[in-house]
Image 1 (cartoon, rainbow, N blue to C red):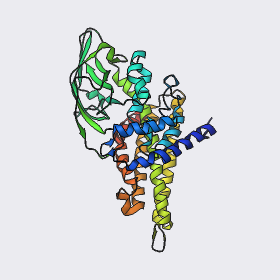
Image 2 (cartoon, rainbow, N blue to C red):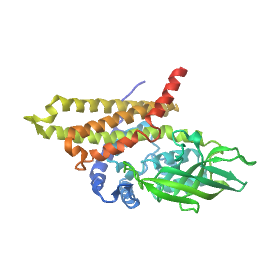
Image 3 (cartoon, rainbow, N blue to C red):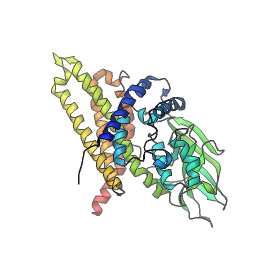
Length: 390
């Protein structure tokens, strides 16, 4: 059965989320605490409290942790509404990397780890990071992982260097990927560990300067200097980090798509209003074919992106892993929404490259979307291999 209807209660909640973001969150887009490195922790906490007051905080979390246990389709509808402002997901605690980390921990962490590392993140009291990407290769190809871990039967010792670690500065819950060396106690290989962000041995070298600014505290360069963790810090099973990363990344690719679809809709709405009111050569510019065709192309792209996201979500809600479909969605949606943002800049003309509207910020952030959680080319490579295997 194929049914594209949105249930009335979900549609009402979508509209409530969109109104919350427009009324309460959009005004903060001019706040000086939205820095070149993203929102500060102070701004994030203020936004979180606004969402908490509206009972819109971490709605995607399992019901056992106080959330609503949304299906993937329900997330698609709600996240799109939240994405109207890049600060919307931050306020509602469904932004990256926390959203993906919460999903992973809810699936893999043991009860003690849930209470110590997951519950405070779900409650909006602290942030988390997923420390995998490295300067010398590990990222899209995690098999190149160089950060090392040793185990003596009681403690792990981790050494290595990471970068592009989103939200590292000030995060309390750390998920660290390292290659566990051969030992007589546990299987070797890529392994996930949990740590507190203020532990000795975690060194934040610097925050990187990047074109995007929608993630809290930006992206950090991190060094692990003899970081000692107890055996209870092991997340899941030793040697299984790559499998767990895929468990996290498939739905996380889609949630990125959902949020950025909302942002692209915002850019389109601003471009439409400008095309209605700006005049040139005797009439509104929207009546010129060159402009109207760009807006039409945007509308087509937004519709196609939404259907692509919904299909992958439907598969996952029906028990499929949907790795292939999530790769299709990530590569297609990221490229198409970037084109949407680019056309919106073009329609706006001179003000499109200024901060007179948020379109300029959406455009820059959308460019980064084509890279994280796997650049388009990596996803196309995986898609191509599957196609050739039949």
